[in-house]
Image (tube, rainbow, N blue to C red; front, side, top):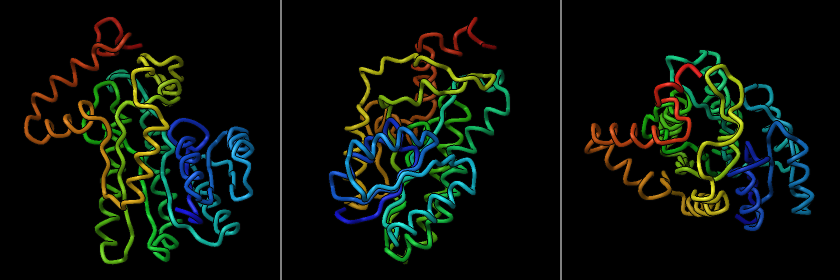
Length: 273
C-alpha cells in the first residue's frame, strides 16, 4: 500500500483510527473523515506526517461526503482505497423505538456509505482500486434489540455486493468486512429507544477483539483483494454457517445470547426503556 491514497470515514476512534495507524505504517497517504476534527488532528500530530488530510465530515450529509472526496483529490490527485467505516449503533426493541432512531442509523451507516461511494467510484475505477465497507456480523444475522443497526448493515452488504457485480469486468475490488464484537466506542454512543446515547457499554470490552487486531486483518484482506471477511469464529464464521443450514437454531441461540446482556431490552421489565 506504499504511496496509495486511502480515505477512511469514522477515523477519529475505534476501528477507523486503528485502520489509519495500520495503513500509515504500510506507507499509505491518508484522507481521514469524522465529525470530531480535533480528534483527527490529534491523530495527525501523533503520526507526524504531511501526507495526512483531516476533514470534518458528517457522512449523513451528502455535501460533506462530496467535500471529503473533492478535498482528497485536490491534495493527492487520486483515490486508491475508500473504507466506509463510519457508523452508529442502537439498542432497543423495535416496538419501543422512536422511528427517528431508524432514520439516524440508516442515514449514517447506509446512506453515508452510498454517498461516499457515489462520489469516489469514478476515481476508484480509474485506479482499479478497492471499495471497502465495514459492516458487522449484524449484517448477516438479525440481532434482537439492534433492528436499525442490523437493517443498515444488511443494506450495506447488499449495496456493495451489487456494486461488485456491476463492475465485475472493470478491475474494481470490493470488500465487505464483518467484524464480530470489537472493542471500540460504538456501544457507548449507541442510541436508545428515544434517540439518546446509551453511555456506558453493557458488554465486557476486555474480552473482545481489539480494534488494532481487527484493523490488521482488514488491511490484509484489502492487500489480498478478498471479497469478504468474517472475523471471529463462534460469533462470526460459525454463526453465519448456522444461519445457512440451521436458521431456526441460530434464531434461538441469538435470542438467548442477546438476552444475557446486562439490562437487556429483551428482559421483561427493561422494555419501554
